[in-house]
Image (tube, helix red, strand yellow):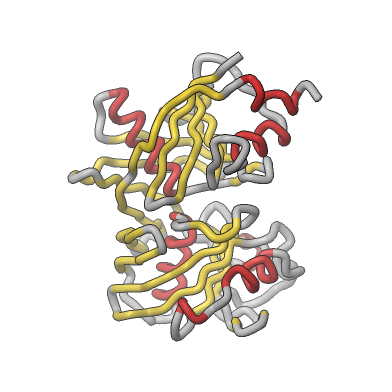
Length: 278
């Protein structure tokens, strides 16, 4: 048994994309972990499964490296959008996710834009374990303190720092992710404001660890910076893997524009499905 896949990435945030639109593909936790393993499997930050959708052009199911399901992923949405636009000969598609419907459009020059939807700012929507001002969380972990909480289909904690390179993200990232304040855990971003229109950031993704880029995290950083009046409502945000153009519109929706790339295609060997038969 083999199964075709495509390996894609957005600024180095990489995905294994499986197409299950023509028939169901039930992957258990162990199988998802095996495929995502960078030494024994294909390797990815997230595993993406395309399924039929009654509300959009496709349903995008997102699995984290630990096999659990994620709600949203901006870079994956742009990758899937580029794939379907090429397939359908269109410049607009609607991607359905657990977090809702995301509209994607071709922006020209190999760039794709995604409307990531509303930024949720209430403490219950993050969610937090207790009522708190999401613009200034009463939280300090190691050298990090006073984060902004934002939910962009998934929870984020954004810390503003003087120099992102000076933060040991590998150490403090998991400490924040698993802090009791976040009952569903959280993604962790450290951001350095360069100007009113430019931000440098790094990210620790929930369950995945440090990644080269995270679209929803860039959205959260944009919203957090604008809420604190550190930037305008649009900015270029540079991650380890490259730059995204972000805009927090007046209607509350967050727009993300950036490139995508296809690395290679292949077939999953039956050995990667062995955990299901163990």
